[in-house]
Image (cartoon, rainbow, N blue to C red; front, side):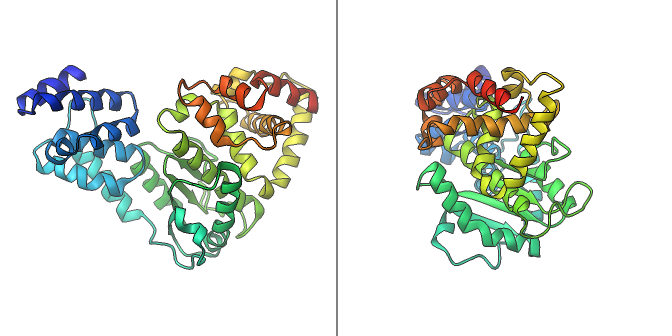
Length: 351
């Protein structure tokens, strides 16, 4: 890939001092390090302003970071500059078609938002239904909870709330480039974004308007978005899945009283009959087999981690993990306990 970018750069007559920046940005993009791509190109504004390849790389990165509004002008400029993409990369036209689908299906800016300074860190697009209005009413409390857990300064997150499952499914595929991966997923939180639909895959309401479980599910996804956005490149590849899911349930715990109770009962029944998942399965295969058990273990592993370190802030743990992507080391340093010990505690607690 570096060779391809360099030869193309020379063909277009890019000054030698800018060739390295373009090569480096291309290499980072091929590794999925999209924030690194944007940093490199931001440090070379003339390259980003004038070169269609650089504009493509930046636009592609903003697509992967779920900001189609920032991707569109860059991809448009790349197309107008005569660049359509490299072999094996998603073409400019395809990316612009995805952006157009997102714009067509995106709900309007939310009505009935509370007049509350806490919402300054959110940009909300929402259909207007009783279910969604209950979520909008809860958003200031979501931010308060997030500040308690993540710290006062929060990154800006876009929230999209849908009434129609058909629109949501199509929007999701255009935004993320894949179909919804699991049968139970009605929402997701990722870099810079939360999406949620009030209807399940059968088109039925997932919960009554304002129910604790429904409000908790959206808050859970907001926590995912904050975790991913605060950590940066490589988060989902590096974070243990039990920590990602367990921490998001911990953030939403006030709404999840019944969920924690039913999980405890389910774990007791399961551990009386069968072996518990291994730490590797909890870390890398959480969603593959019996996710009810594995999610349950995840939420109680985080609960166990916080018993002795009630003042632990996830931002500290993320900062410790980021340099090498070593979450086990970060957990030991920040919480004073190994993940394997947390698993053993949960098993002993419910066996």
